[in-house]
Length: 366
Image (cartoon, one colour):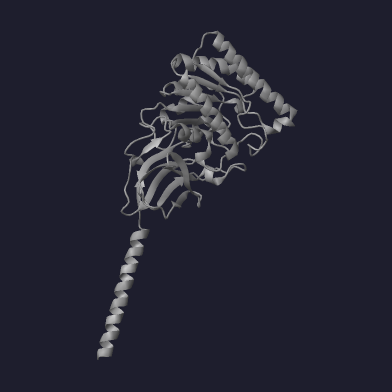
């Protein structure tokens, strides 16, 4: 009888042990998801009118179809939040059709997390896309549980119509208690696929995103792959965004003839609509392939000659808030900064961000 009672008590003890252990494991692994709508989102030019796309529906009739379709990509959007979570996950929904031979899936459909630590933004992890449409990923785990600020960049080259951030149960997640970006006018960058992010490995490495972290300044990404062609409507749209600097980086999408036709009128229009905001005109980057491809070299040189001429003409006309960034040294001269001779690697984007940051700081000192 005593032996049976001993066995019974032993089994009860083991059962209680496994119940407690199971509850602890379950508690540790429970993830609570919070919709993006509850947080600050940097990079949205029209936050009152859109959630996941860059332009409101009211602008569709005023834009070329290619620009409108690309404006549905949340390029440059970053969810800005604070948490003491030990694990951060995400669920997000993307489109299903976009595939590029020169662009990583982590840029097209992935999300990219940065944490503020020791006075700087540090890469923390990525959400790898693992499905054609419905994505789910643990971005980082096994953290120390200290409260930090985070930036979670959305996909650069796909539509995204839902995003939820997951943290371990019991963790606090909220808008930042103080903001590095508040009360600072954003930069607005208008341009091509390079501005949109091609071909960084992940959204946070596109140069507009790097500038955002380097300058602690919200950046509005108006990059449109193959479609950054100085459309006058973009000057009108840009002028409605109260900015610290407008950056124009459209060289790779312009022929010399189109550059000659549109550069001066575009800058005149933008400056007339927002006369107190500096405008930075950037050269077409120096393609490594142009060292050997004489036709490409001629093309780039002619576009940049137009830009230089336009800058000098407008300065002679008395346009004081216009600045110019030549191509020399923008991506280095070792040939290692591109994927295909035009679209940039992470190294190329880093070099561009450094050069533009230096120029922005010079402008703002004047």
